[in-house]
Image (cartoon, rainbow, N blue to C red; front, side, top):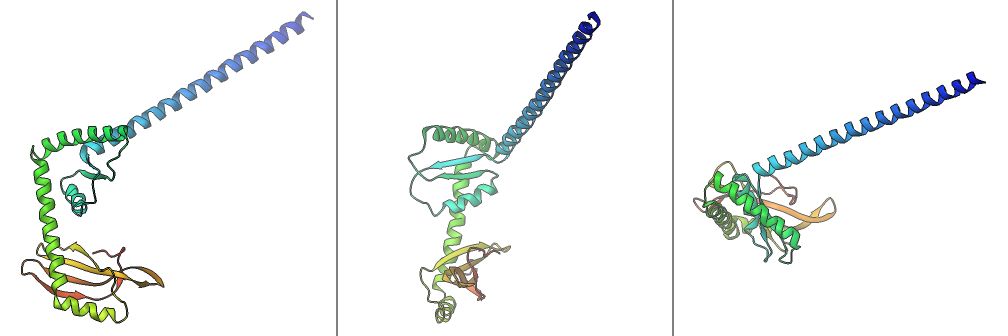
Length: 221
């Protein structure tokens, strides 16, 4: 009888020890996994901080659409920062405060990187690119070659709401201007680049016209 009691006690002790060891291993595994997660989260945060330091963000708030904003996106890449537009003046207070803090930080980074007058340099570059593209579009609109090409295209595709998009080339004096309006591609109505004019902005003339029709949104040089 005594041996049976001792045997049962031994079994209970073994079970208790097993449970304790099992729980310890579970806790240790959880601790290791939490540590790994913390390390990964920390690395992710640090990566975001490094990216933000390398390519800081500058946000402008509200106001009507500005045609120069697309040029600000381009020029910002030249200066290695990200330009952002918050499209409404009725912004969330928390988000607005965060954007202001980001702007202050970005301003500090770009002052060290470019100089205290970085905003003036940035806006001057935007104005210069905008003027060149506006000139290229104006030359295209007035070109007899382009007008005649549009008339030819209109025999099968009536031009409505014509728009002009500019693209750079490897020659600083040449711009490509895509002339676009709605047409049919694969039986779908979409924006079509009906022709492209190569514009010599220095001599203010269209030097060549490419007439193959392409989908406007996918048109790339």
